[in-house]
Length: 87
Image (spheres, rainbow, N blue to C red):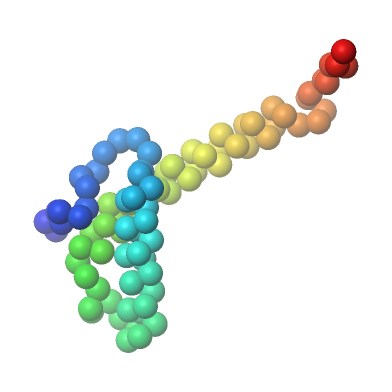
């Protein structure tokens, strides 16, 4: 697939909010296409490309966030935190 001018090239690091907004819009269009005619025959190739571009990094970012939050939740568990009395 050729890159659309609206689809930024893949890059390392977090996915920007703007790219996520475009991906959400593309996913909404896919849902509508499936609901309307039950197929993806009329799916915009640029939308499909954007979803493929964003899917893996977005899933990886979400998984990393969840793992970090689990570590924080574990470290901040009530049985592991001693509150010092204030003055």
